[in-house]
Picture 1 (cartoon, rainbow over the protein chains, first blue to last red):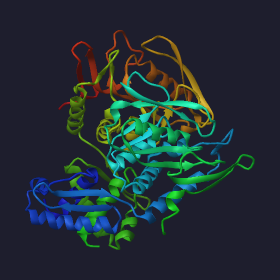
Picture 2: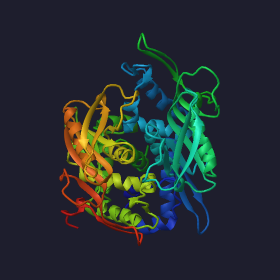
Picture 3: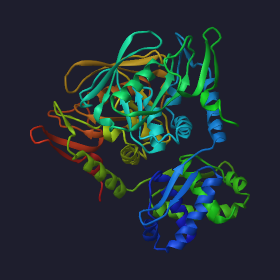
Picture 4: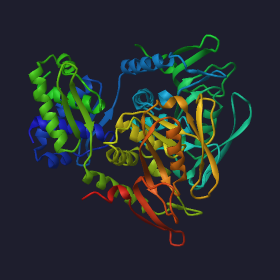
Length: 273
Length: 273
């Protein structure tokens, strides 16, 4: 293979295998080229990946070393993605009877979902996430996309146990908005002791459900690596949890005029843009 | 940018924007290079994409033309992916009390999920799919991954209506395994009239649920583009539908010996390998 051809294949290979330590010998065999030739190729890839904010290419020395591609976006890119989603939120017909928001179009479109996933993965990139947890059903697409980008497994919490989940861990929790005691359960074998679990959901009202998942993580002998939500809704009073990160915040849903007051969530509060 | 740098960026750009018609002018501006230079770059990318089974790069002539990247795998690659998944199915501890199969580990691991999605997307690549439909909750990860690869939206059918889904279309259907009349419902606005809908699910027993979704597609004034399942389970008698495509088939679940008889599904029956 010529260099130009190797670069195309190398770029594809790295993008398809993020977060994996790849020994240089693998590419030496794949391209039947010398170590120094491959190293030069990788330098070109690394420079473009960094310049275009595709991600970083780290090198680990030694016999068991190699290289690892970590996808990454910049704070500025995260904000650009969030602006796209904010624009979608302002669309008409999003307000449903009772003041509920229709989000299924956003959560069912891979292009939009990818933006949500990239922002959350960027936010928790340094949180050493081992697994992602969410609650059925609307959190699933977000959990899956974040898990895909971080290349970790994800598990779905349910309101009721299911025969296809094996032994389950169950907790009761207080719903923040209705003050009722509710139930949630997750497959025990979906997590290993000591794992760092990122909790995600599509919408946070009172925060009771997210708090329930935090309790569930503790019952699994795991640790909460972070809590991330797509949309933080309007809520009066104090929430049972404060350490969440949100992409968007909806302050007011005006049923009469069919308008929504949506803004960037707290992910973008502390960042300098 | 030098050619080597352009090739890295071009490869990344195409992989991130599949199924989209991109005008050559876009790359002329992006790289500040001539049309002929870009065309030469694209020839190199096209050759490697084809040789490595990454996908095809089609060119459309004219002012409104451009190029379009379509990800694709070969029949042989699909079989290699299916072999990996078949190996996972043979793992111990997969059989649950009552003869149910634990699949949540496979459906919660992006790496495995991607293989399932690639096989189904490959199978229905020529079916002109406009949207993907599945039923909550375990079909969601599969629907999302297929939708992501085909770059189309997906929607989730539920057993009960939800306040966050807006107006819904509802059908009753006969469960194939228990012969009970059941209910399923989906958001009306998730589909447009005349769309070609691919129905997917994780597990098929009698096929009643899939048949219900077919009825739902018709009530939405859409057309069924295909029916794809991850695992086809053991079933005695005749199924209400025959035109499904399966990745794996489980013929027997031996509770006493904790073994599963799993084979390739009918996707691989007619293909020459």
